Length: 338
Length: 226
Image (cartoon, rainbow over all chains, first blue to last red; front, side, top):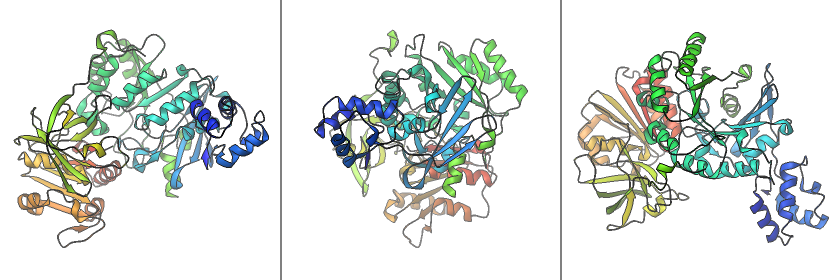
């Protein structure tokens, strides 16, 4: 049966009219779906019993429960949600003082094949619907406390653009979760056409996975470099006016002896010149079979200082949930393999 | 969000070209060509669209750099935006293309080229451009009629052209996937380059296998079709 959860206001209004219900039923349903703590059509009590029965005969509410939860000693939780054909996606809830950030997946598996990524080892299994994306927020116990959302879980968001944009609409609309887009960050490997549409249609922050400023190195880490070279991604970003509120950041996993040298700092400064941005340095936690190693703490700090010294705001992302396979893709791969 | 003032109305650099050939070389697999307007390096890609309002898709060039035409090879995806329409183009029709670009390039060093399906395209371009002398080409497909350009490759490359077929058998093909073929080899050269082209899972599996057999990851270059 088709799910109501994941539909936009326009879609809900259209289906209400199709069923012969009043137009305003669309808005009522949206509020029940995205703003209240109910789990069934039967609980939509400002709809008449007859209309609820009619809706229930065609649709289901559509929340999908997680099948596994792991909790780290640092409070990070990882939820495993079932999806198509016995596959799973992972969602991380990361508490940090007053903030609770949810890291959502946008695809089942991934097509991008990055050398350092566990999700890529599953190959591509399928797209998530907007409902399955938003379900990862709505259907965790902390959903009322969520302050920030990052699209940095499994999959490449701009390879599932339509559903990702729909999920952003649900999250940021007044009739939906009514979250500020400034509390949402979508991370991409640099799929340029998708990035352009996103910049046009959403106000959420953008993060780009860079990992090295040099083409030949990036190509060996990230096959996408062949199709969408970093230079093209940066050229496109430079052509947009991000204003004061919207943020663009670059994700940079620091690998030992690969991308942690002063030469890399110099090149980063060169290619990012003219972009108001920040760099997030990420510690690498090895995945099975990888030939890569994370850089040591001293080099990481020095790298950060050098970049900050050159005027590029650079932070080191705190590693969270290391004891619960927090690296994206590990848990779902383990579950998929049984 | 607005574009910065100086970039407003700047179009993607697409130019119109005229189709000279559309050949269905295997069921639902087409090779389309147009007169070459730019030089390119074998292994590079072009972006193609039929409508400026639709974001272009990326295809590997599948012709040699001495050929008069540029060709691309593609599978028709039933639910695709572009390929069903592209499969219907006829000579004389116009399409929009970018200049070839990209860094999936091979040189003089010995190398293994490993492809599945239409991932053969960049390697066929390299072959047509005369850089196949010290290369080994391994092509994996499901069905025997998917060994595109088989006669030409077999004639020129002989035993350095290895065909793996996972769902049909013949006397001159390896029965199984490319990964199985590689697994069964006792030794893999570690001091050469490996070029991989195809879908994500094949690329990731082959790359992992090569790394586990001692090939430095720096020697592995991949292009993924997505």
